[in-house]
Image 1 (cartoon, one colour):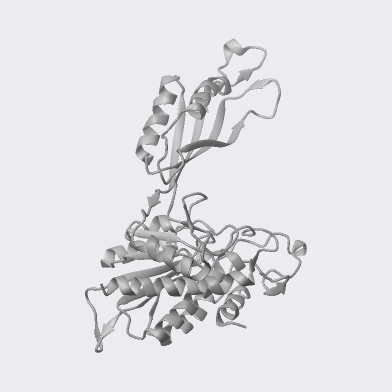
Image 2 (cartoon, rainbow, N blue to C red):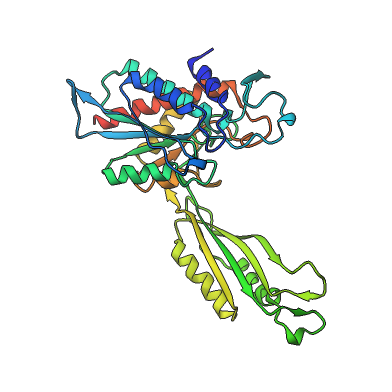
Length: 391
């Protein structure tokens, strides 16, 4: 069994459902400390939802002295996993790593314990071959990515920013591939902006509409306009911004009562062509123009980020091609990731991991043939970036 596969299995065996780290970070710190990494726990959150965070950094040295002018590459990931769902529906226990038909089964196999193991082993191999690298290497790991994402990477980034920590390149180990490891990487993500709209009317008997005011009827024209609005055209990296309703709640349950209010939940997934503030202003303008009596609360889940082709993208593309022969596809599709927080202090952020077809599903798995190439891609990327740091 390869070191990468062994460490992946050791991580899967720990039932780290958000926010419980289940000892994953202790295991990883134990592996990293002998390599010269300073491992710092930055746990956060209330006692009933305590989040485990690890910031681990190895500073480049020359003749025993720490370098001051160097580059820093960060691997970011999460040890937490989503709940298993009905255990009886799994073909094997979700936290017992199991091999079957050339695949490794277990919760977190693809999202994202294989990625974490691959990067740790890649660092071990890189440092064995290059004991005196020119770049700083760091890992930022959390147990709150699948949950609220309030006390995880977000908190660590805030602390690093307060310290003036400089980050140059970041690889997030999210499962980005489609058919084969390396066939797709994410070089950005759309922003997410949610709203809860409450349109107020006047409740009354349905037989006497003149004595009531139906908020559903009033809201429909405005909602129709919002659904038909072209918010932007997107760009070379992002599709056009999308506005979607997810829930509508109105009525008392009785068929003869005009409701007093209707509540609509909606969400923007927006490109870098729009801003959260601009989208909010445009929505309010539509609602006001339709004369609605309403309340609207906003939740900004994350700003969009984009890493245009440059040093990091090229290093990863070269590593993927050298290892697999693939010409990787750049993509910004999918949901959010912790890259949205890291991009606030790191100018180049990409996401690279194994195929994602089984993530969050019953019988989550990763193909065995995808694990070792992922480790090699990470190692080759470190080699490329180390050459850039010394240029």
